[in-house]
Length: 307
Image (cartoon, rainbow, N blue to C red):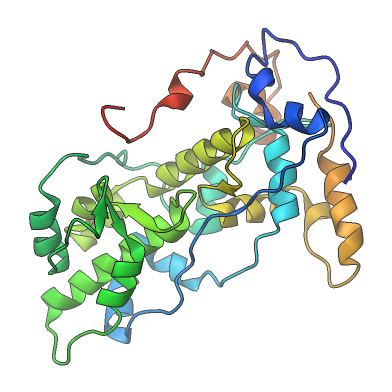
C-alpha cells in the first residue's frame, strides 16, 4: 500500500510528530495493527440473559460478531493525532463523538461519570458480588482473567435463586466490558474497579458508560499512533469501524471487489492536515481552532501504580 508524504509539519501544533507512527512509515517502516478485543464465545443461560437485558448493557447483546478490517483500522491510526484527538483527513478533521457512541452501542453518555476504586480487598468484593474466591493467579494488578470468568460462570447451578443469577449476570457484564467495550491490548483481563458499579444492576442506567467507552478508544488510538512495538489496539474497535462505515460511506463494505477496497481505504484517508476543531460536524460555523495543549504527560498516565 503506497503512503503519501505527510508534507510540512507545524511543530508548534503537532508536537508529537517525531514519535508518530507516520514518521516511521515515511522512513520505510511498515506497520499493521490488529484488533485486541476478545468477543465472548457464547451467551449465558436464558435466566442470566433476562437479567442483563434489564440493564444498560442489554443492547450490546444484540450486536453480532463482525470481522474487524485491520487495513481500515491501520489507515485510521496513521491519521490519528494525539495532540488534538482527531483524525486528520484530506477534507479536514473529524472524530468519533458521544453521539456516535449512543447511536452505535445504545449506551448513555449524560449520566454520572464512571469512577471506581483502584485499591480494595478484591477477594471480599468478588466473594460478595460474584460468589467466588479468587487466587493470586486469577488477579493481576487489580485485573481479573476473563478466561476464569468464562470457565467459572459457564453453567448456572440447577435451582439457582435470584442472588446467584445476578452474580452470573455481573460476571458476564464484566466479560462484556473487558472483552468488548473497554478492552486493553491483550483482551484477556478486565479491571475490577467496574465490579462495585454493578452491585445494584438496576442502577446501571445511572452511569455514563458511553463516555468511558469513548475515552478508552481515544486512549487506545493514542497509544497505537505513537511509535511503539505494539500491534494490537485497545478500545472498542467495533465502535470505530462502525463509525467509519457510517460517517464515510465510501468505506462501507461491498459484496464484491475486496482488493479494490484496500486501495479505496488508502485513497480516502490519505494526506495530512478537541471539539472546537470539528464544529462543522455539528452544523456549526467552523472557527479557527486554537492550538491544542501539550498532552505528552497526560498520555503517560494509566491505572498502574500511583498513576
